[in-house]
Image 1 (cartoon, rainbow, N blue to C red):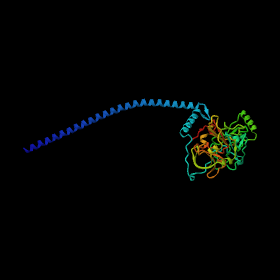
Image 2: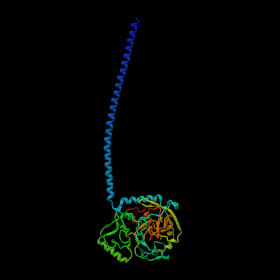
Image 3: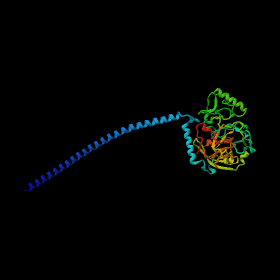
Image 4: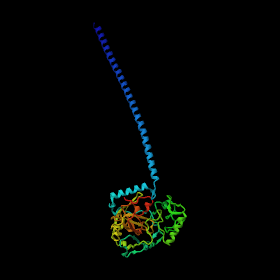
Amino acid sequence: MSDGREEREEQEQRRKWEKEKKEREDDLDRDWERDGERERRDSRAVETLDAEVRAQSGKRTRRSFLVAAAAAAGGYGFYRWIDRSPGDQLIRKPLRKMLEFNAKLSRGVFDERGLAPTYPVARSMELRTNGNYGLKMDLMPESYRLQMVGVANAKGLPQYVADVTAWEYQYVAKKEAGPVEHDTKVAPKAAAGPEAKVDPNGDAGMGEGPMMQGGPASTMVGGNGEKQSVKMPPAFEAAFAELKKAQGNKRPRGQEEAGMSDNTLDPGTPGLLLKMDDVTSLPHHELVTEFKCIEGWSQVVHWGGYRLADLIEKYPPEKKQDGSLPKYVYMETPDGDYYCGYSLQACMHPQSLLVIEMAGRPLAQWHGAPIRLHMPIKYGYKQIKRIGLIAYTDMRPDDYWTKLGYDWYAGL
């Protein structure tokens, strides 16, 4: 009896185990089916999403190509418009207008009244030489006079002359070129070879080079420092010959690349001829400020000299009929090879200095002796060396680098 019961129990346990096993297998099958269905749903969802993305991508790609094509066409059209615009002093008129807008905006914000930062003397150094326009020959100090034109009540002053243009500056050949002296348009001697010339016109600045003889070359040079070979038209040759004849032995004016200034004085212009004593009698000032070049470099320099505002106060401009003052000041080197224009306000700035000393020593010829300008609110190309003329004018004056495409304002 007991054996039969045990056998039944064992069979009952087997059936129970087989039932549980089948239930587990059924559950597993159902899980596989659910997973498969889920995967199929996910796959369909992915396919649907991919189709939507491809559709959107196609639309956006076409739109992008259309936008890019329109932008390229617009950009090219804008470039062609600028490129075909009339020129204005070696750059296209729209670019010149943009420079003038920037200048107007800068003047509106800063009004040429802000002070440049000053530094301790220990941080200063002697300024590097860069650009020798108007300095090709050494000026004989005893022949120096500072011409001033447009001064109020000039006839009553002892320095008055009926014709400032009749004064002749005297020069001597350079004994030394100065430290690393070179025009940035011409390769330095070390780069150009031992036979490279400091003076590309080959006449040491005396106006006797090929250009003034009606020859093939001018003072313009190429990027490799070599003279361009450009034959002058016969009409220009005759005009230069006539000009030279009229000037006698006087040194011709405007021999550098930009040519003669539109503001160069006509013969017979009355004004003052100031000696150095007339300038050095002003209060002496020293300034340690940063000289900034448009090329991207700068140096802190110790300057010594006299405020331009003090000179203007001593020799003020003649007022107009309505009682107002002229708006501008024009400066040029002796014989007009280099020239700059400024607003009267910039010249009255307390840091605008007529410099005769640098780094505690008298100014060297290659730095613009006997007098150069330091105006720290302007870039370096506005800081004219070897000032020969200061003239008051109500018309915006000519400017050397503006003729060659630069900004007239040149504010920092």
